Length: 537
Image (tube, rainbow, N blue to C red; front, side, top):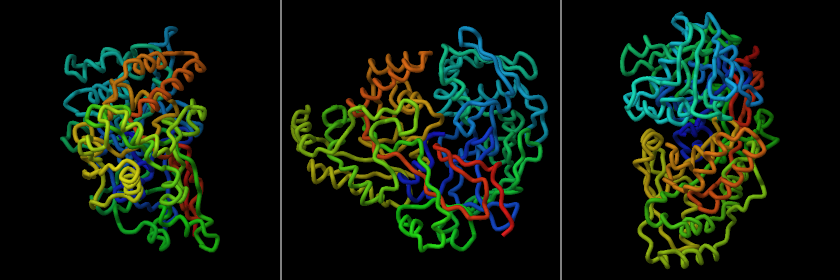
């Protein structure tokens, strides 16, 4: 979701420590029921958050916005607690023998919050709007790109999707370019959600008063102060036990607010981890820890000197002592990434040759590069996102390693988060700090999305025709064992060419008040609000 970039969430909680300080990711957990947190009353949950950048499903590319979109809107299918695709607005579907045509049968009587019934035509409109160049979606190619006509629409060559047809009022036919193992998974992402044409027609900022189909509706939004979601009484699925969820936007120190009982769930930062895990602390029993399907990384602009040379990229990777940084700065609250795929993701392989700290070898690579010596390297700038012009401690440690081990001085340029998240392709310098959290549990979502030369999220501009060909074959391979073998080969190619320095795989450290029940995080860091309730206290 990321989710970027559909990647944001706990990912950028570390990368952008101020902006996304306590952002909670929201996507379906059981069935399609979604996020949760607690409150001072028995029918309201109070959370801390930074607020959304947009509530337009077709435009959103950050998990902070997805937090709300996943509550307000929904789609044909969703992911359950086992991360399997299950029915949502589509109660069932059929697939053609050649695997390229899907026929979705929509539930009858599903309504937008306004009471208007959802039909197949609404999905057709929603997807075509996402692919309309005027919408400015940066996610449509990634999540709808398999559908016939998507690329041509995005290029402005045609005005409708040739692969989408509303056959009847509640029957939608979708044709894709080839049989793809992860096509249905992509439809669980916000870009594929249904929106109301009449809602969009109200004006440019229609999404400030969104008319969705999700389990919650937007009740109130005081920008910079609070945003409240109310239970959707027209929801077609299991209705939430909670009547309201209030997000207190940048309202103060979230840990202090938790201690004072002003919010009911809080993400624990490194600075508080010793306190939160101390058995003498009355809140230590509130702590839960879950792994996250995420990758934090430093990307190299492979088209810009000196990172147009793979030897220089590998040198910068080997010169960083990630184990020390994870231990000293993060206090082992996350794990060092051994590759591109995070542990727990299907296809994860511990046998790959990964990047290990070796300062001597890093200096040898610089000497063997086309630049020959550090003195010949052009100035190096690292692009980050956030507020306040503060360099996160972990980045300071990485920069210090480059200085001590290679003799390279690295400058940092900070962009405001919205510019970083939505304009990184144009704004990046020689390097950039970012991350990715799984939209769905499949290696395609990391290797193809981040490193295929045709991907919008390939911010490194990495171009390897052999890798592209391998990823293209893997995308349509029907035998799971053969497919994962291809992705293992692809991951090793990426590690060898080093278009990025994999840093960490995340974990979620969450404090939850004892009176909040049913709240749990899956490996995406996704809780279920519909399954959450607040007991009398």
